[in-house]
Structure formats: structure tokens, C-alpha cells
Image (cartoon, rainbow, N blue to C red):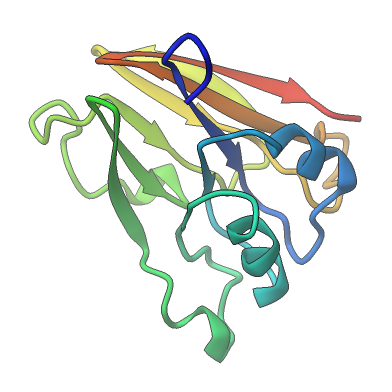
Length: 157
């Protein structure tokens, strides 16, 4: 929690075994880190967990024995906000509004997105791992103050 009482949640996804120094630097000081799947290697989870409490989901490329403990979805509470984490938004298996969810965090597409639909904030931090096509290398952030939440994505390089 920073001096204004806000909680910062750093968002990463699709590292595919590469946690760039720029992503690490961005996450310093976050209260929580959320990884939206396609982690790639267990060392990524270890590095992130050393920075802040970590919530991570399994992506379609997380197939090794090390990834078995990762769930396909996670529901977490940050302040007074419920955040649902899933790798591929196409696999969304609940009605976020009916479930009391304010934010849905996903990955998979490698395309950063912050969008509000039907009162629900959808955030995809994009990919901060190996570059795919001409898509940006990016991360995201949630700032939670009580029941209010704001999101942004940041292009790193």
C-alpha cells in the first residue's frame, strides 16, 4: 500500500520463460503481482514471488510437471475489489457481474488492452516475454482504492 492508501497490482503475462529486466523494474514496489499465464519456466514464478505476493494461472503453453499446481483461473480480492484471472478470455466460464467481479485479467493474445464492458474492467497486460510478430512488449497495473479501480498498460520497449 502506498502513502495514499492505494494498492498496486502489477500485471504480467506471456513471459514464455523470459522475465525482462524492464518488467522486473516496473514491478518493484507493487503490493501484488498477477501473472496471466504462459509462464514458461518455474524460475519466472520464483523471481516474481520474491518481489510480492504472486497470483498466477496456467496458460496453454504451461504443460510441464512444474505447472501442475497452477490453476486455470483464480479469483482474488484486492481491497474491496474482486479480480478474476484467466489466461484466455475466450475461455471465460462465468458472468463476472453476477459473480461480483470488478476486473477480469487475461493474457494469451499478447495484445495489451484496457476496456470496460457492462461495468466490468477487462485488462490484458500484453506480453513481456519474447516479442511476437510486431506486438509491443508491455506490462499492466491495477491501482485499487477501496472499491475503485483504475488500470493501465505500459509499453516497455
